[in-house]
Length: 430
Image (cartoon, rainbow, N blue to C red; front, side, top):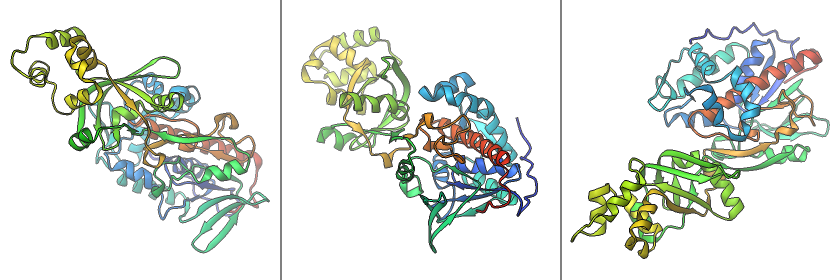
């Protein structure tokens, strides 16, 4: 699976077109690599003091780079975005991404869940090796350059520590991220500039996020911070199909969060928008079938309390028992069938998603119908978009990151073709 490093030609200053890439995350850096390999002078601009900050933060949890499941299953994780992402991921999907990482001298391994990680479980060594290779290829970096949009003549405007500056590159690639984690640079400030320029942008919303629940003071005090595992969670999607996942989540003071909830955040968010609240069903005992649960609930308990009986016969205790008491009325505990049904399908009401800036990623962004097949804005020739700022979303587990790499690679190839076709060799500066 290993792949040798991408061979970069020696940059030819002076007679090669200059491309401005705005945003130094995975999508922007991947586009820079493709362009540098094509002999193009590239400058990457970023508002932060250094590039790849959100990438590094993602690596603090183990740097889940991609997933090793079969490609068809992998593609199914992208929901409504599957159709347009499929050709990009077939060209540069999980296997190709792992080979590319190996080419940087970073080994990877597949965890028991199928998730793929760098051997050192960190993002920093990968990013250092990548930036070193890009600099050797002639890619330049301008940090603390916040993009402000375009001048009336079409030049790019930047706010810098030395004041505002303007440039007019041969082509521009925007890879500005979504709207979550503003402190790391993904603040969605680009929405206003693009909207002002007539580019259609779908409203940014939280994705891979937690949700608020109206907990009682007692439940909040006793169970906030505790994990709930293992459980199966399900909800209905906008098309009426059931979304079902197994895993775990965490009770917070305000609601729920964690991997299982993030995997269902898209349909739950749409439920909240459509109905005013979300509805999640929890199977608290996925290893027990419904008949077994009912039989044990009905079993005579003698002088034992119901809590002791459920703990003894079914292992229900702690936060799971707390959830039952939080979500059911007293009468339900006197009705064996209702109680057994709730253990296998406990209804949990979600009030709203947590704020966008707390989300791992964002949904919404540049509308796909405003882009051509090369990810160029139809309303602004020579301007391309890639990464999370496009209108799509994906769950955690390496899916979001893999597609960011793939869209960056696609956009970079399209920019390369654009500058070659337009032959803007002499007056391009960046």
